[in-house]
Length: 375
Image 1 (tube, rainbow, N blue to C red):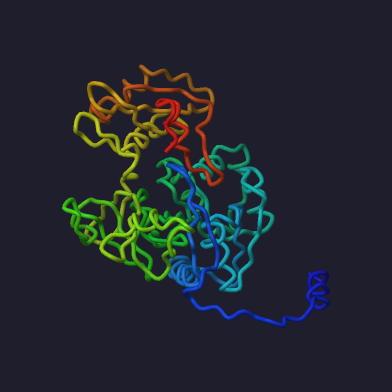
Image 2: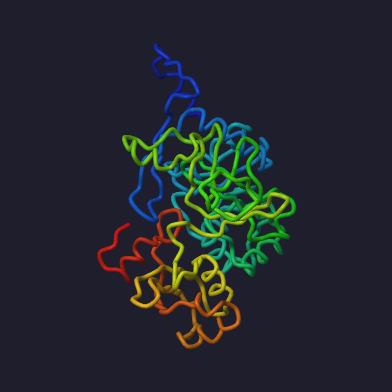
């Protein structure tokens, strides 16, 4: 700290401070590219400011917080969710160079961490780590996570340790927050992404192409608000494709909601498999697989089929010591999934391909079953 103060004191004084307004571009953040080519989203100073207010409305940040951040700061979660809101309230950010389950568990205890943002895979890796049982989590008030629902037994393991789990939903284009579960009530609806942030408007795209209120029907989620991005850098056509009815951003995700507004992300529009005229949502099949003993993780993609148009292919990561076979999986899924939803093929893998934030790279998996496909 003394060295920093000395460097600041010796630094040249500011001679020209550029004035900025909320509509001015602040930074470019690239989309994750899990289903195609990454695009640079233009986030304005307003995007970052209003997203910070949204985060403060859902997460009880205080000045004594010590928030652990291992997501890169060029990622919307690392920068827009973990960092800015914490600093706004005078809290402290503890940085780690990447995620390691054992290191994170030790850091929580040693630095008295009060909160962090993760993806479900990280929750699972910590629960499965040898240090989990004896880890001191007494300082940890909450954990925010997103990307997909956590498996029930994983959520329960954290809740039994007294940690509040808050699932959220967002995207780079929203800087990133759209939905989040309140810090109370989420334990009764563990697969829900919660309710919209305060400064966020939501709707769904109806089957007839009209903008419909959330809860009236299941459809593609539309988002509007002052925290949204200002288009993709030098990609005007791609930017225009994301807008409907003049102001609504098309999320690409199918959403349904309870009458009281609690929402559930059904799946990505692009990931839906249409088999024999029936919609198959990979997330539903993946949840059924992960619920089976011996399955550590799973991802389902579609491949062309002469008879049905498309069928599902499940990539399955077995738990350590598991000897599950394809016949075992089919037998255990029987009665839990409709026959047409059961994957036509199972592929066992040592590990699913993931990006730096832990999301499954479906483009890679599609390339394995559809050689030559890259998006």
